[in-house]
Image (cartoon, rainbow, N blue to C red; front, top):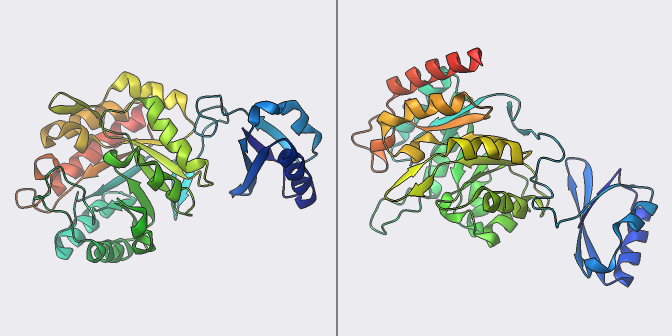
Length: 325
């Protein structure tokens, strides 16, 4: 059960906490952008939620028997602001290499995508790979390169965090990405829920939309409601696909901004542009595109990456579609 308070009334909250404790229920309080939220634990069934409205500062009580008390669409669409970028209010282009390899190549891509209107630079410093023998990224050195490139080009930055123990290394990265393999790493999600950075949560390789939203709920229930959902396709045999109908359904089910990563969904650069055109016709909030300075030489996912020229063509076509709709 979740309680929404009108404002911070310490006396009121203290009174309610004492009453709840007598019923065998404890309450955790957190501040979500000025909205005070209480999360109740314990013998919840012993409480009639109607009694909670007797405290003057309570404005709403939400039963967590509802599928997604915080990530659902009952409160209307949320926005997530990162610097000068607002997801859910504008169409946001995120672009950059899958993994950071050479600083000069990263800068070349960053300058090009910034000139084409991208707002966020992506780049993997820690890269979980299927094979332990594949390139795993540059770690903290890569994060430093990403920070420098973002500052030079006026871009926000996003990179995947695979382990909560690495949080301190991401101090200067603007958005923390949870990769598909970690979507149900609940310990990581809970730790990210306690930090003050926006979280980009990718859908798992075989996860339902319901499970995806529950993962968002893990983050939000710890106090961090700045969550951006990213659909990167689900596995169908030996390939991944984006289910357009289910993507549309997702937009109806959640209050959170949703973007699409067609690069991972397709796994083939020839398919990235047509899929981007298709999903851009929906009310999604942005695209996340892999772009490399030299797709032939990159150590990771070169086959699904776009060249700078191809990315510029994609932006032109997507912009045209967005204007039409």
